[in-house]
Length: 314
Image (cartoon, rainbow, N blue to C red):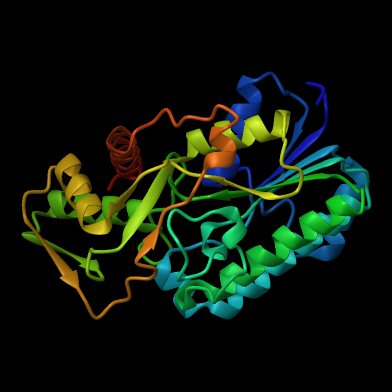
């Protein structure tokens, strides 16, 4: 794409959207369009249509979504299904009718079956049932992936569907009800240190394994596909390449936070999938190698969270 191509990043204030924005800026792309939620509600079809008719971006990165951790997903299945379908449908349909030539859709590893071989290859998609705790979100993301692909097959645009593993990094959400696992654990252990707690209780058994990728590494992988994509509209996994038990993750975050108390596990809470390690051979064959290791990334995130607490006056 030309460095002056008009690019719309939907969800630019979120963790993924802001990382994409930073990467585009660092690569010299300056004609970038953004809108806050207050300026453009992506659930409002009329407003979205008017925006695309006026701005007519050549490229769209759809990083806007209703997201949350296991508790939020499990207790709000209808909201996660409805809102994500609405956002995707509104943005894709308006973009497809107003000259967008390249569309990058951010999927999720939850689209893959609960029980499938590890590491998870793209071809395992839709081969057996989902993990039930995030089924609503998974169905919405699958619909988005399919719509992006159908529009590619119809010749409307060049579509790219990215499937990241679990993410963390700058702009992460530390809310106790809506955070993902790393941000949620960072908040708990930093709070425990600051308040002198003797123990921290975490959900589940600590046995499940998860793969974590720093969001700036994800943005690098997305940019590689943006510049040269040999896979067409087929989904492409982007992962770190190794997974870690949640129990070990908790110990790493506790140590990096300075917590020296006891880590307890509430086994009445769900574990989710027992393992979720993705096969990222496709992006690796393009030369992608993550640059930020898990422990370094966690240290950076803890420092960011402590800075946010200081800025808020704790």
